[in-house]
Length: 257
Image 1: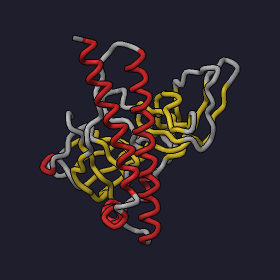
Image 2: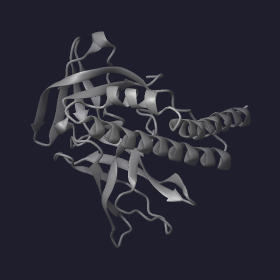
Image 3: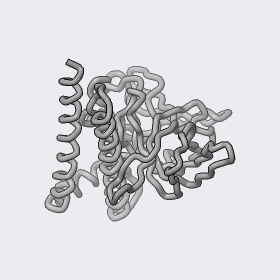
């Protein structure tokens, strides 16, 4: 029975990878409808060209990141006997305006004008475009409190995406930790391997291994990466979006939560 379930998991992820290729082929044939959706998702306060460019770049990072993580998972499933879940479709619960910000002693929170009556629940992802900026930490009927990624107690399982053999792939995993400063993110607990190369500009996405978030949501890019004599990596990450510049954010629900 475990072998049968493993085959099902492998088949499911393979189908997602094929689906990702079909989606990429169809992208060029759906410019009009996609542009309209991008305009709806893009945050206010920018020109149309800036909005569409930012969301399109994030969409490409999200698709590449999700595909890379799933490709890695597929190889793991093929190498060992085991079971795993396939990340579900994303669902937008609401777009909410930012009502207040709290930034004291390394704690960084946002208050949004949506709550339990709008279908919001603790643990939901909060994003600007397709870039994760935090998660719902507190809830009232018509409001919610969001812990930003840069909060010094924030921790998110993350993957570094690089190109191997010409295809994007998750090359390493770690924990994205907030430093308490604006835009302050560090990638910790990255296990070194002799062939591992980490360079500025590489994408960082959610790994989906902690069961809280699905793989592939954009987090940011590597700003700097240094390895000391003890083979411990010191990695700083530049966030993909700055919530300080946003007026509204998306609350996302993932089936199973």
